[in-house]
Amino acid sequence: MQIQGKTVLITGGCSGIGKIMGRMCLEKGAAQLIIWDINEQAIAATVREFSALGRVWGHPADIARPDSLDRALAATRVACPPVDLLINCAGIITNNLTFAEQSDTDIDRTIDINTKGAMYVTRRFLPQMISRGQGHICNITSSAGMLALPKMALYTASKWAAIGWSESIRIELDREKSPVRITTVAPYFINTGMFDGIRSFFKIQDPEAVARKALKAVERNRIYKGIPFTEHFIRLMQGLFPQRWFDFVFGDVCGLYTVMDHFTGRKSPGKPGMTKEGPGETQRETLPNAS
Ligand SMILES: NC(=O)c1ccc[n+]([C@@H]2O[C@H](COP(=O)([O-])OP(=O)(O)OC[C@H]3O[C@@H](n4cnc5c(N)ncnc54)[C@H](O)[C@@H]3O)[C@@H](O)[C@H]2O)c1
Image 1: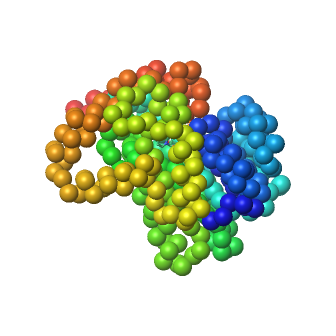
Image 2: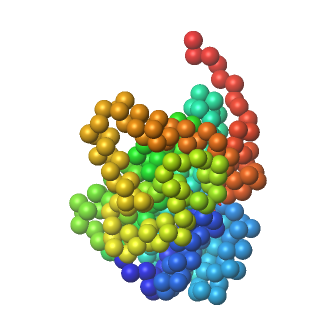
Image 3: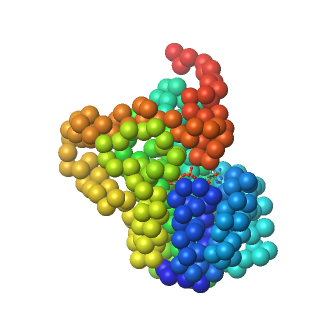
């Protein structure tokens, strides 16, 4: 898809790679950029910052809440033509607890935003794209959606589901011979603040470079884009090697299974990408013992 002249809507467009991708779309000549984000203050600041680059609109929207999305949609439709490119980028990580320590609240919040949120948003634009015979949806997932990683079970679960969903609708559209395109993007850790504190053997990526590669994947109508490219070999290695061997090489030798041990996330509670409580401070719920 050529971005010039197109209407682009991005969720989570006030921070991290979402904000950079939005700016890059304007730099590439997008006719307008619509930002849906939960952070109202950041929306106002981003719209101000980008207004010199082109037409920018911002609407508060919690992608985990259909009623909030319906309000944002109604506000968006007043001023904007149909969306040509939808980028589902909003996402969160809540903490680095083991699954046994998680609360129902964090389970719901992670799945509601990282998995169901993209579905709710897409359902509001895909039928119109299909009937118009044009459109492109880019789903920002994660390499964690192909790996099993300790102390991020909720996040990995949410992203595995997001990849399966994104690929499934891509195949549905292909089988219907629809010109609407889906690009699934799965990046490794990026230096945006969301995963502050992690210690990674593999290079933590530059946000500008990841945003540039993700948009290039859209422009080339790529089906699936692992960033960096070596991410594409994860499934091959999982298929070829015994699980214990994979655990040893990637988990123990490369340290992937301890990557979250020193995770802090963004330091200030309530900042984008975190639950309000911040890591480790979420109220625990007492569950009846199963036995
Ligand atoms: N940072 C990484 O290392 C990394 C790696 C792989 C994939 N990703 C994925 O890339 C995407 C962007 O990550 P980032 O690091 O740029 O994050 P970020 O925390 O910098 O930005 C996330 C944005 O989403 C918004 N948001 C959060 N909850 C929302 C909600 N309920 N409704 C609407 N907006 C909401 C936030 O306000 C923020 O503007 C996420 O989906 C993340 O899971 C990130």
